[in-house]
Amino acid sequence: MAIGGLRLLFRQGSSLRLGNAAPALVLLLLTPHLVAATFTGDYDPSHWTLVNTSADGTASFGSGGATLTLVGGNTGTGLSGTTDFFILAPVSGAFQFQYAYSSTDVPGFDFAGYLLDGGFFQLADTNGQHGSVSVAVTAGERFGFRVGAADNEGEPGILTVSDFNPPTAAPEPSSQLLVLLAPALILVSRVQRRQHPSGAKIVRAAVVPPLTGRRSTGAFPRHQRSKE
Image (cartoon, rainbow, N blue to C red; front, side, top):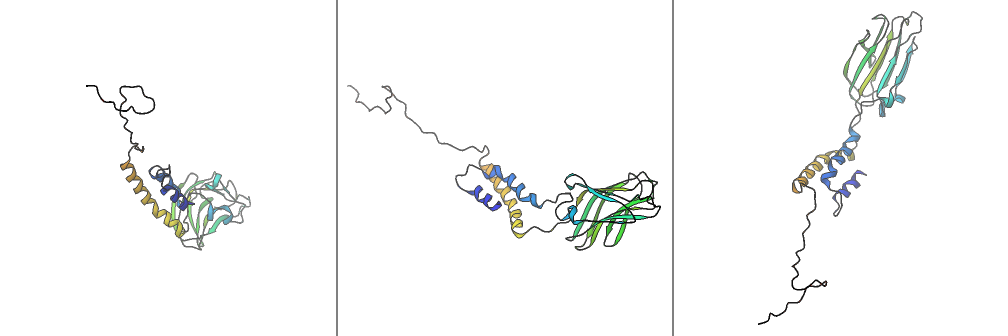
């Protein structure tokens, strides 16, 4: 559809000027390749796995997959436990996200962090801690989040993840071509605006000689000889 749109823009006699349409078209070309900071696509909930070990934690997503909330265990057993939520990375790259931790339990009795290829990296164990993380992951590695409980009593730890920006697969060759065309469209747009600043069409006015001697009858009067 994008190629057809380009043909339409360059068609002679079209009422749509490239100068006016270029910004919108460039946005259309680039939008599919902008990574949305959400748990969607290859990272939507169906691709993640929740595992409770001596815990009864839960995982839930905000509207549109904008946030992830991972709640740790609180079984009341007095025993330690973990709640893991993970995915196998579909491609290599950096996982970036913001996190916020909350808990009304005594600091240190609950904790949260991220998982990477079998390892656990703690980020918080005290109510109100927050920050940002960027971690490199190789395709096929297990990446995820964990909330742990030292005794499964009191209140659980809660980890909220937002601005989740994972790596994505490179665009297809045809899509790459469209993206490369974007700078050319902007250049042509600027040239057209310089040539026609107002964007108005130039119309040549017809010159009509004035009528003299007679009232107009729809035709020009014939010239008469002057009397001597």
